Image (cartoon, rainbow, N blue to C red; front, side, top):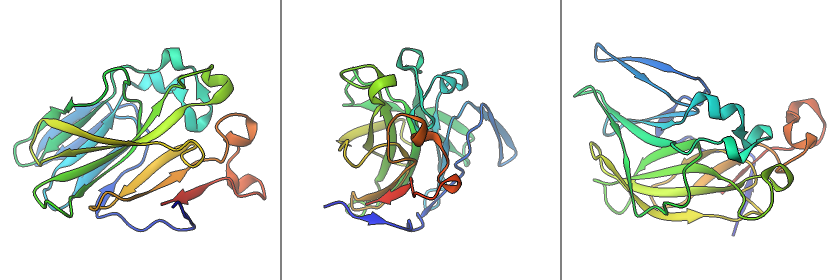
Length: 213
């Protein structure tokens, strides 16, 4: 069952949801330079940082939440990276078990401790897939929420599941996960394409955004 919520609970992870082409971090007297598009998550218990990374140029053409729907120009090399402040090591996390025919197109992300295995982390990631049929400019993106597991310091992400429901997951922007496998996410708009989809909800009387659990 899907319920519409007016507020989203706070995550146990700290995130900076700000789009930028290059992020400079000063951590433990080391400088980390990393290309990042949308999300940085600090997992407090382990101290690890996790990043949703892409190429800045591709965001000009493929960002479904802002009606940028040129699927042929999307990045095919998006990835999730980690940074360990205790070792100053940055790691490009390798995907295990993830369908190779579905390149990631990352947006929001969250990283939380597994409720069933405290040594394991659950990684939730918004993935803006291109549509399987039709042109994205006509039908919008086939956006989903991906679930992976990892461990602090690991160089791998183990694929678990893809959550997909086009009637509910419409233009997802961010996600807040829980250790039991459940999550909240926000839809930027209630339509995948068109002028109504890109007008900020604060400018018109009809509410266009929502949070879903």
